[in-house]
Length: 201
View 1 (spheres, rainbow, N blue to C red):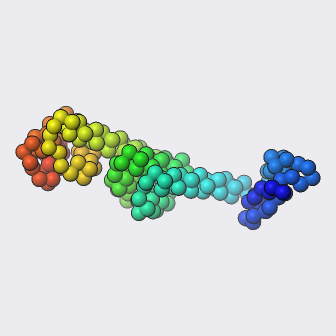
View 2: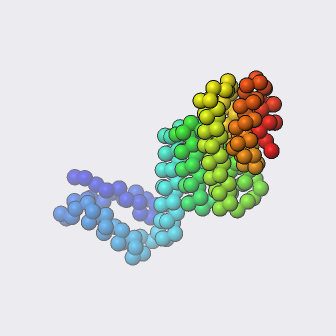
View 3: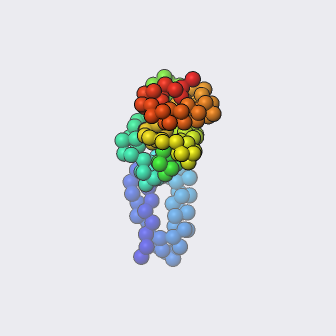
């Protein structure tokens, strides 16, 4: 006999899915009606909070599968708690982190931007906006560096430079200026420190 596991009043209740000839969906619906009528004694707010926890847990698991480093996951969890992020805001943060990891972009730079906003006690909505911009700039930075490679410049430490180029773009440097400065710096064999100084406005 198949069974459906239900959470009710904080305890796990095993309900026979085919009890009394009822299909599993009907049995589950009966339990749902009981909860909705208040017979369960469990506040609706607690049910909603449990659903939020489940969604966030799935988002975290997805980020892990995407390749987000465990340390970055823990940092982002802590930042979401400290910043008092709503569920939707936390879900967006972990979704962005997963996308960056799948694309091989540095999640650590993204997490650092979130941390900067939390430390300054900026409104969570604004932090999410800034984090989205950091993710976009990381993508643009990689695109610029890839283009320079295709043009034949002797690019070195490309992955290490991606966060720096992203920050330069955020700071107001145009893509054209960054591209030109990088091409000249790579051609002249300049050090990383010199390159960083070149690309910032």
